Length: 173
Image 1 (tube, rainbow, N blue to C red):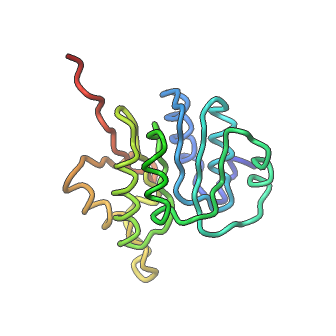
Image 2 (cartoon, rainbow, N blue to C red):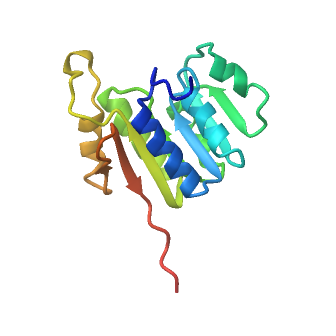
Image 3 (cartoon, rainbow, N blue to C red):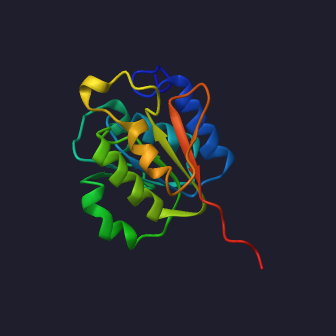
């Protein structure tokens, strides 16, 4: 059921899980918990990683219930943007998955905050980056990322609805 495609499509989930596992990430931030399916999949795939996931609503699901006693997973019922000051006091994150609000202003604000919280050598993955058939619903991930792309590189991931940004580590002296 984890890969059934009810929320994040299978190819997108496989991309994210392979990226997390292959890079041996230690700290993961998810913006937009929804049913906690992605957080659960990341936890099962990277059990050594600390995972922090934000959402302003709590939706009961088997994934959320499975994570209740996971010591390395925090499902925070709070605004991501509203938690910015506290998040800036935490260690940076190796992988950030942004799949929260898809409204233009929120995509830009969440992305800017995610860029601040990203560790050197870390990666941000945005979901629902695709030709927008959502115009009538106000969902604007591609348009929001065009603003972000003016300051940092953002790359579309072929055959997925994901986009990525890699934060280069500092150059060795």
